[in-house]
Each structure stands twice: as structure tokens, then as C-alpha cells.
Length: 283
Image (cartoon, rainbow, N blue to C red):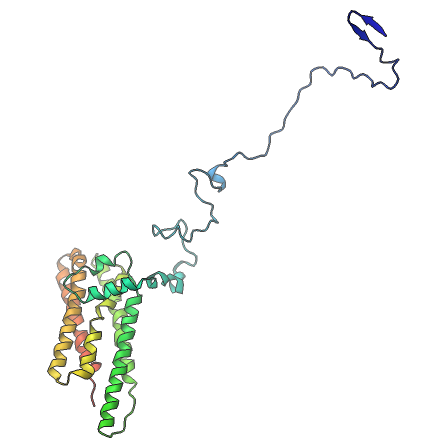
């Protein structure tokens, strides 16, 4: 052991159990490998949520795709989706208050504001039940009147199924074929209209025939009065359709008058057919 100044040095070789001295390694360079850790927030290209980035592809877009009417990717199934129930579900999602308001609107044909009020949300619920109600009322009242008349005269009565088939064919067929044909015509004359909106318009135009159907089948015994009731209902229905399509069809140019007149006369022809074959119960 040696001492020098204020320090004392112990010889490491003479100390029992001492730790061997470690030679001076000199300058050692420490190298760090590049980390694989991701920074937060990650970049938008990785499909993660970040400020200003789009949601991932597997995100639930059930509600985000209906706000603006478009989606980033086409719906699965393509045109086959049109043959599924889900494709038409939005057109039956309507409140009772909306249906009642549209029924009232159909009874005031000179307003001509039906297409404007239903442009954002046309429905098929009202037209379906209007046609179904007309079929049921025509069949039930017609059958009841003939039954009572035959019993009063003590005659044999047989149920006539033709009244149901005729009614279903006329009402369902009219609100399907006529709007579809008009859709093609308007598209040809460069004045296209929404097909569902045409179905909606023509369906509600038949509502006026429901109150006209009851007196034609049972209440009014005079034939001339029955024709007047059927004529008034047909005129209201034809005016309702023509005035609501007039502003739109005017863009077709010179042929617009011919198209509007054809729509009006076709609706009147429907009233005549209903009076002759459905609103006419013979005993």
C-alpha cells in the first residue's frame, strides 16, 4: 500500500478477493438500430383514423352512405340488387302523417304542388294501399249489393270472382304500366322524370275514386248521377296528374302540349273503364 498526498493506493494484487481491474476500453461507439415502432397518429395511407383521413374500408357505412345519396364503392350485387326487398324498403319507410298529407293533396288537384312536396321522398306505400283498398271495396260492396238484391227477389246467388280479378288487373296494372310508359316517353323527349315519383303520383291520383266508388255501387240508384260522379272523379284525377307534370314536361318543347293532353285524356279514359266494368253492379 502506498500513500501519496491525500490519497491512498492499494495494490490490487495483494488484496484477497478483490475484483480484477478492467482494462480501459478506450472510445466505444454505440450504434442503435432503426426502430419499427410507428409514430402516432399514423399516416392516412395505412387506412387508420387520423385527423383529416378517411375511415377504414371495413368501417360501418350503413348511415354515412345515405346522407348524400352516394357511396365510395358500388353496392354489392350490382343491378341484381334491384331485385331484392332491401332495394325498395326506403320507399315504404314513410310516416302516417306524410301519407295523410299526400292524400289530402290529391283531393285538391288545382294546386299542382304534389311533385314538389314529394320530390325528396316519394313513397310506394300509399299507392299500394290505395289500389288494394279500391280492389277490396269494389269487391266487397259489389258482392254485398248483389247478394241483398238476389235475396230480396228470392233468387239464387253465386259469388262472382271476376269483380276481384278485374279490379286487381285494372288498378295494379294501370299504376305500373302507365307510369313506366310515361317514363320512357319523357326520357325520349329529354325531359326525364324519376320512375318512383311517377309511380307515387299515379298511385295517389286514384285516391279520389274511393269516395266515388261507394255511391256508384250502392247509394245512387239513378244512372245519370252515377255517370256524373264517375266523371267528376275522373276529371279531378286527370287534372291532378296533368298539372303536377306540366311544369316538368314543358321542358320537352313543342311536344309538351301533346304529352300533357294525352296524360289528361288517358286518366279520363280510366274513369270511363271503371264506370263501365267495375263501378257498375248489375242485378
